[in-house]
Length: 285
Image 1 (cartoon, rainbow, N blue to C red):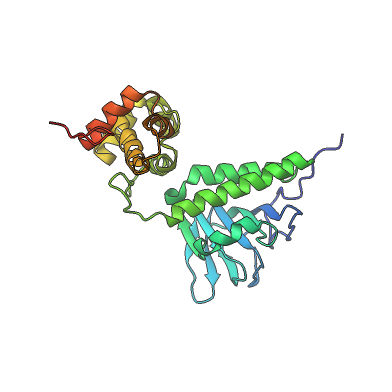
Image 2: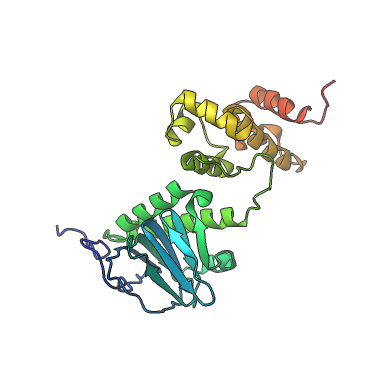
C-alpha cells in the first residue's frame, strides 16, 4: 500500500505562500514555516480563511489596518478580504491554515458574520483546542477514504462552531465568566469549562489540564475565581438548570442529568446552596 499523500507537510522554510489546494470536501488545510526571505503579495480568496500562529511575529495587512500577530494568535480572513502577511525580520512565523468554502459547506453561511477580519487572542478562544483541531485536520485531509474525508469536515465544523460560540458570548455574561489572568493554561481551562461544565469532571482532571499539581491548582483557582473548583462548576450547572426550569414541561430529573449532576440529591443540595431555594421554588427559611 502506498504511503498517504503529504502535500500539506513542510520539510523546510518557505519563501512564498503554500499553493492553494481546496479539496472536494470544501476544505484547504495547510502548514507553513516562513523563511526570513518569505514574501507574499496582497491577495484575497472567495472562502473563509483561518491562520493559527504557532511561532514568530508578523503584521497582517488588511485594507486600512495592519494589526500585529504573534505566537498563540488566531487570524481571521473573511471571504473576499484583501490581506498580506509581513513577517518580523528576526522571527518569521510558522502557522497552520484552514480554508473553508462556504459554497460547498453551506451550513457555515449563517455564522459568517461572526468571523470578522482581525487578530484574536488564542488565550481567550481556547488555544489548546484550536491547535488540537488543526493537528487533527492536517492528519485527516491527507488520508485516503471517504470516512477520513467526512471526519475532516466534522472536525473543521466543530472548530468553527466553538469559535463562533466564544466570539458571540459577551465577556460579562455571568459572574462566573473568566477575567484576564496571567496563567494561560488556567485561562484556557476556564474558557473551556464555560462550554463543558455538564461533562463528567474531576478536580484531578482540571489540575492536569491546567498543567499544575492538585494543590497548586486548588490555590490558583480559588485566587482567580473566588470559589473552590467544585463551587464554580456547580454554579455554572445551576445557572443552566435555572434556565431550563423555566420550561414547565421539563422534568427536574432530566434537567439535573443534562446539567451534569449524577443524582437528584446532589442536584438539590447544590441548587439550594447556590440559589437559596429548591428547584421547586421554595426559599430557605
